[in-house]
View 1 (tube, rainbow, N blue to C red):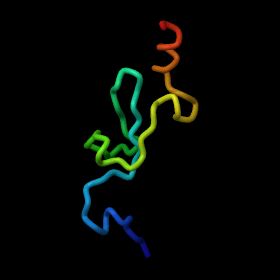
View 2: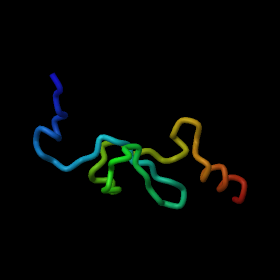
View 3: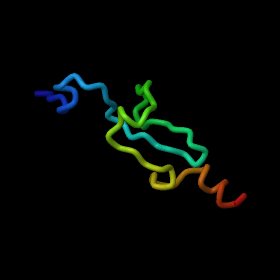
View 4: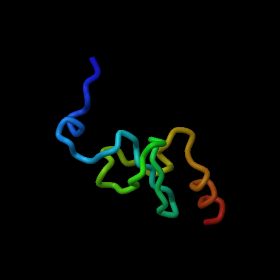
Length: 65
């Protein structure tokens, strides 16, 4: 039996991925099907330096800063 999440059950627009915010304020989602890259539709939000193995943009800022 496959069960939907509570937001799916309620018909509330949301994404099951994690929104990642980069140093330059650009964002990306871990769900490749996500089309709405806004905070309101994501329950999980990380800054790119919190992502496992870090992020290239953080290294660039550290080197140039």
